[in-house]
Image 1: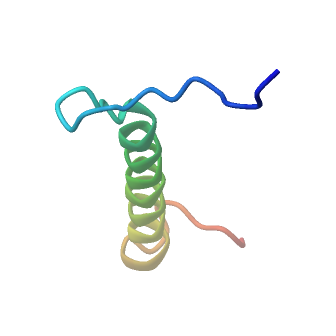
Image 2: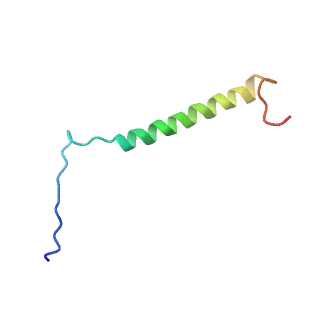
Length: 52
């Protein structure tokens, strides 16, 4: 056993960051939902309230 592992080079064209895109999409969706919720709470008065 020489301790050397198989190293595979990934070129720029082969790299497909679907995980990163998914995380960014989820984060953006959370921000949009929070923005919509705060819009209802802050600006629409009695339509949707947190307390009362």
